[in-house]
Length: 630
Image 1 (tube, rainbow, N blue to C red):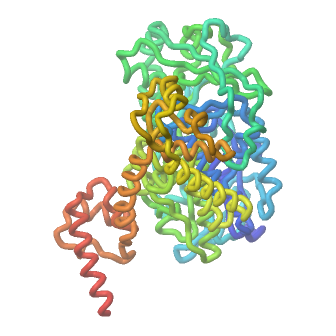
Image 2: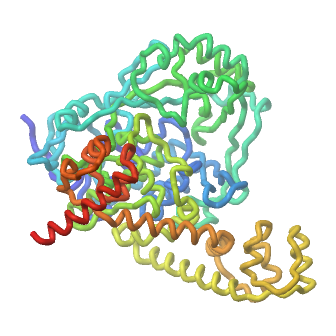
Image 3: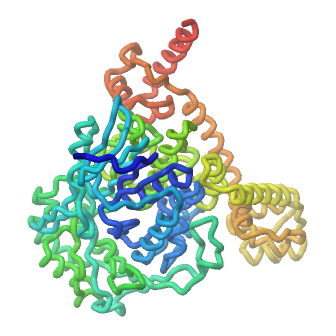
């Protein structure tokens, strides 16, 4: 007989990066929360790459931190190498990336969860959701125990009906040999939820003492480490760092792969799921980029506790014997001993267009979802969604306004909008090119953009919020000051300009105008800025960027104004698109399928043209007048 064990406000299913953020957010907002996991040893597990951040992903981690999430704080405590990527380019694409000690990362996150008030961790598999009149009521575990709740957040990652494959070997397990969750999918289908089958993969892990590093290029971390969390003291992260290594595949490697393609489950038809386009296996790379005679291979330590090395760039599902031959053809890996085989993993996930931008299911009130279950890829994308889903589950229970970030406010807004609006037939990966307003959405100003929202929600405390307001004020005051500091063509000024290869002054100018020169910066002009106040490094950084890119920033702000107007035009929930005359059939079908919440969201749906939007705007105006008369 099934028994009601306990009652909770929020049930979180899964303890990966999405589940951790969702559970912490709900609990910190005062909701009694229980987080289920198939194994407590899988909390915040990194089954693939041993790093956090990277191009565009670093932005997501910074935004999670600014809103009151945990990922940034956790990696600051457990990283073993840190590097700012894309420094040769503009600040819009600078992205922080840190190698993690995987075990330490997991342990530290578990410690945080276990010491969070209102939060319970429970090992057990959720097999069924309980609903009543289209609203979530609770969950049932494999043992038959019932846990009543007001909201559920599904963060199942790659565990649903998971299957790990290499060659002709197929194991019905989750990542790293952990138990798969085999029963929840059937319940979801019964509830009318559309499911997809996706695939991802991971490379082999190789014993570090079997690698010849002398044949590789050593990769060092930054001399001055920038923390992920805005709350971390920069001095605390200036630690000794571990090296990574770079080597390359070669024609011999590619020949081995080509000769064994028929044995790859990717090409034999054994794998059914759709894989990530932007993180392909080495087999995919060799086939798709046949003109390239080599590919980068990054050798990355899994942590300080082990000599296991992650072979980045060589994800594969080839048979075991081929893996040995393939890896040992790479310079430095000639005597490599494989600790763990490379494998592909298939898993069930949802079509995310079934979600509102709050990450709540449209057809089941109180049911939210986040992470790879939503068809995305990556730890950072998962954490961002988990945070938003956890916040909104709590807000719904409290009867307060839910948090929706739009595309002009955050990379998180771009990520979620893309998931719920666009047709995704493969695992979604965040990229800087997806953000239309990326000059405004830099990682360095995430606190200025999002701390207020975190404070309004209740995840950012008063002291932290006041620090951001103070920082904002100091930036504004310093920008105003340098805009009004006049600089003459003195000998000292001309010598400074000459030292930077900058054109000498013919007449006076302002300090700000000098900073706008490409070869100069706020730091560079310090010798001729006699009244410069003593301000923190992060304030200096913002002053430099805002002054140097002032024209571009103003232009994007104007574009955002137009964008906001369309986002503000809300579409009535009960609007019947069949009644909208002159809409093309495809547009009508897509609008009915997605049920966009605003004109802005409708305009981004594939198959809805500008002409369709014009028709919809006219209809909505008439619709509003009719409703007004009623």
